[in-house]
Length: 400
Image (cartoon, rainbow, N blue to C red; front, side, top):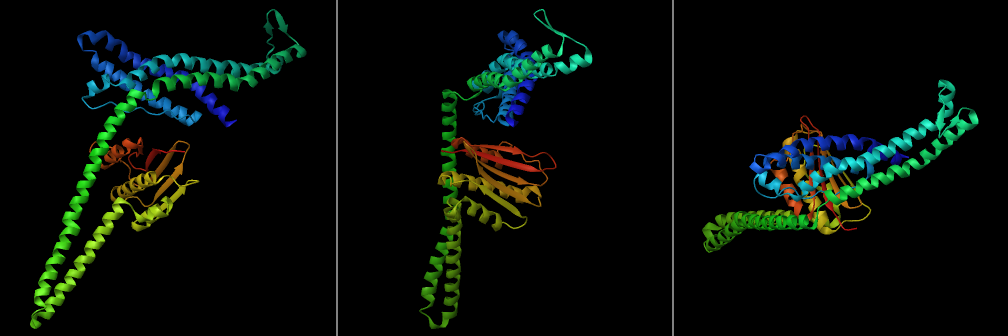
């Protein structure tokens, strides 16, 4: 029954949403095409593609929330200026085509819902409102003027109501076909996305290696050099019986530097692969939450079986970075980390009751996190209105 009600809501709202998209895109598209010959219409065309992409995102959310259908989002515009990138963005122009064609399929869904549900209810109640209102139906010259005949209308109403879910579902299936044909990424989109994300992955790997090299050079390596120098000096002092106390001090200092170097190497190794992940993602996230003082963090991991090691590692480091943002910027009093497995994605959700206002600004930490997720087809969704609360969701595709 819940599915029938959700499909009915989708069908009756499809036409108003589609007409709004058609009008909005058409207002920009028609003058844009008219003025394109003198180049003045190109910004309007780019704006039409942008607006169509926004309506496409609305349709994806509608299908996901009401129908449980997840339509993959194509990659965004490529590098370049705002105008050039959008005029060359194939997914944007497919979204324009979707906005132009959507009213046709939406009209079918709306008509099916109106015909089968509304007319079905009206016919089913015909014996009552005929008796109360004195209105008589006529079917091909045949008057339904008495109770036995009015039951024919009620029977027709029952038949329409019985067929209504299947009729609406059939028209919605046509809408789904149109959406999958025009709103999902093509092979060319995936190839361009792969090229961009491969470059990002190579750059991120190079940056990680430089960071590790810098940490080793400035940290453990410098301490080990100090240990070596202290040991050499202590060895020279040990030859003189009058300088044994100084030698002992140098040996203690060398021991402290060696311990600090080992601790730094251990922290560096944790940054590459946290040992707690060997015991599972739930254990690792619980350790992460309890290792940071300040506010209580609730951890919930709901997965029937463990994900692959690479996915667990990605989710762990995403949770670590998002939780660090909570502690640094949110002024929250409590937070929660949730991980669950859905049919095609692993979902990480980090929620806090802080002041809100988080956004993926270019060059910022959240933007960097989103960029690091793209090479594995992951995505980051931030919901953070001013005043809070803040919810960050990471979606990561996984193999079943």
